[in-house]
Length: 195
Image 1 (cartoon, rainbow, N blue to C red):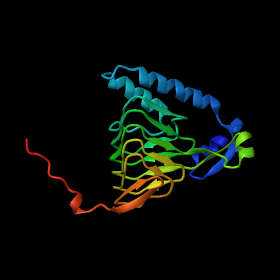
Image 2 (cartoon, helix red, strand yellow; image 1 turned 45 degrees about the vertical axis):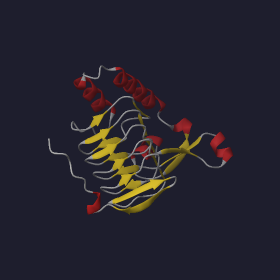
Image 3 (cartoon, rainbow, N blue to C red; image 1 turned 30 degrees about the vertical axis):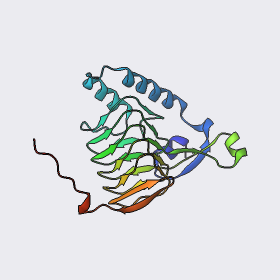
Image 4 (tube, rainbow, N blue to C red; image 1 turned 60 degrees about the horizontal axis):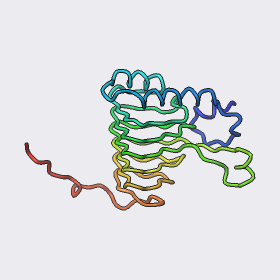
């Protein structure tokens, strides 16, 4: 099995950085650079670049600049989603973004990691595990989601949190490390102003 095969799988893995497909990373860097330089009104060109860059692009998804990723082909949008300004997706494993996901400014989704043991880290051993955001997930500003994490449908992650473990559906979670605070219930409904 090659590093590319491992990258496309849902399995956690560890490999040498020398085995990673650096040419595909350079391709993604070029496409991200082009995307980030476009006129904000040129939505057609943005969509074309994202369709070329990403593994699964949904036309109702919105990605704001600046956006950066490692490879792009491992990022999958499954419907409408909003990725706000200055987000980074380190997609050394698949990242699945559910329908209705809101990803606030400054968020990092990091499948990639490094060996904990210093000798292995110095040798360039990298680790990776997939990330899944369920439907209607909301990540507050500057949230970091680590590899191997699944966030359940409808959950909200508070600003500045570091998510190192799975979060169940329908809860508010926050903190460093992130932990479940409470379920979302009817008390969370707001009354919009009538215009």
